[in-house]
Image 1: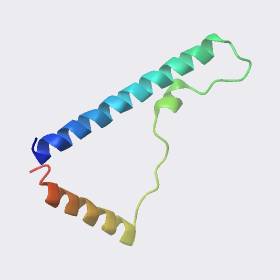
Image 2: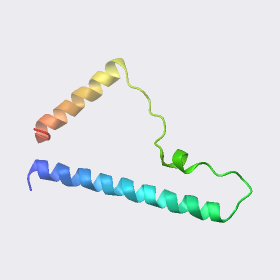
Image 3: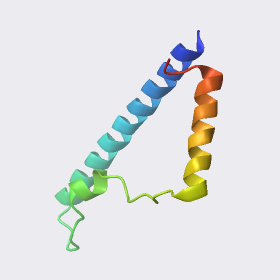
Length: 79
Protein backbone atom coordinates (compact mmCIF):
# COMPACT_ATOMS: atom_id res chain seq x y z
CA UNK A 1 0.00 0.00 0.00
CA UNK A 2 1.38 3.40 -0.95
CA UNK A 3 1.60 6.28 1.53
CA UNK A 4 -1.22 8.05 -0.32
CA UNK A 5 -3.46 5.01 0.01
CA UNK A 6 -2.53 4.63 3.68
CA UNK A 7 -3.52 8.22 4.44
CA UNK A 8 -6.75 7.81 2.47
CA UNK A 9 -7.60 4.75 4.57
CA UNK A 10 -6.83 6.67 7.76
CA UNK A 11 -9.01 9.61 6.64
CA UNK A 12 -11.88 7.20 5.91
CA UNK A 13 -11.47 5.58 9.32
CA UNK A 14 -11.64 8.96 11.11
CA UNK A 15 -14.74 9.88 9.07
CA UNK A 16 -16.46 6.60 9.99
CA UNK A 17 -15.60 7.07 13.67
CA UNK A 18 -17.05 10.59 13.59
CA UNK A 19 -20.29 9.28 12.06
CA UNK A 20 -20.49 6.53 14.69
CA UNK A 21 -19.96 9.05 17.50
CA UNK A 22 -22.73 11.29 16.16
CA UNK A 23 -25.04 8.29 15.78
CA UNK A 24 -24.40 7.27 19.38
CA UNK A 25 -25.00 10.83 20.60
CA UNK A 26 -28.33 10.93 18.75
CA UNK A 27 -29.33 7.64 20.35
CA UNK A 28 -28.39 8.87 23.81
CA UNK A 29 -30.28 12.13 23.26
CA UNK A 30 -33.43 10.34 22.15
CA UNK A 31 -33.19 7.88 25.05
CA UNK A 32 -32.97 10.74 27.54
CA UNK A 33 -35.83 12.59 25.83
CA UNK A 34 -38.06 9.54 26.04
CA UNK A 35 -37.46 9.23 29.76
CA UNK A 36 -39.20 12.60 30.19
CA UNK A 37 -36.81 13.87 32.74
CA UNK A 38 -37.69 17.00 34.65
CA UNK A 39 -34.38 18.64 33.81
CA UNK A 40 -34.21 20.48 30.51
CA UNK A 41 -32.27 18.55 27.88
CA UNK A 42 -29.63 20.30 25.83
CA UNK A 43 -30.62 20.61 22.19
CA UNK A 44 -29.47 17.91 19.81
CA UNK A 45 -27.83 20.57 17.63
CA UNK A 46 -25.74 21.70 20.61
CA UNK A 47 -24.72 18.13 21.40
CA UNK A 48 -23.61 17.41 17.84
CA UNK A 49 -21.73 20.63 17.19
CA UNK A 50 -18.03 20.66 17.96
CA UNK A 51 -16.99 22.89 20.83
CA UNK A 52 -15.20 26.16 20.37
CA UNK A 53 -11.57 25.77 19.48
CA UNK A 54 -8.68 27.95 20.47
CA UNK A 55 -7.53 30.24 17.66
CA UNK A 56 -3.83 29.82 17.03
CA UNK A 57 -1.80 32.96 16.41
CA UNK A 58 1.77 34.03 16.01
CA UNK A 59 4.58 31.57 16.63
CA UNK A 60 2.32 28.67 17.57
CA UNK A 61 0.35 28.98 14.31
CA UNK A 62 3.57 29.16 12.28
CA UNK A 63 4.97 26.12 14.10
CA UNK A 64 1.82 24.05 13.43
CA UNK A 65 1.82 25.03 9.76
CA UNK A 66 5.47 24.06 9.44
CA UNK A 67 4.86 20.70 11.15
CA UNK A 68 1.97 20.04 8.79
CA UNK A 69 4.05 20.96 5.75
CA UNK A 70 6.86 18.66 6.95
CA UNK A 71 4.46 15.74 7.39
CA UNK A 72 2.96 16.28 3.96
CA UNK A 73 6.42 16.49 2.43
CA UNK A 74 7.56 13.26 4.07
CA UNK A 75 4.40 11.39 3.08
CA UNK A 76 3.93 13.16 -0.24
CA UNK A 77 0.22 13.21 0.65
CA UNK A 78 -2.03 15.45 -1.40
CA UNK A 79 0.23 15.76 -4.43
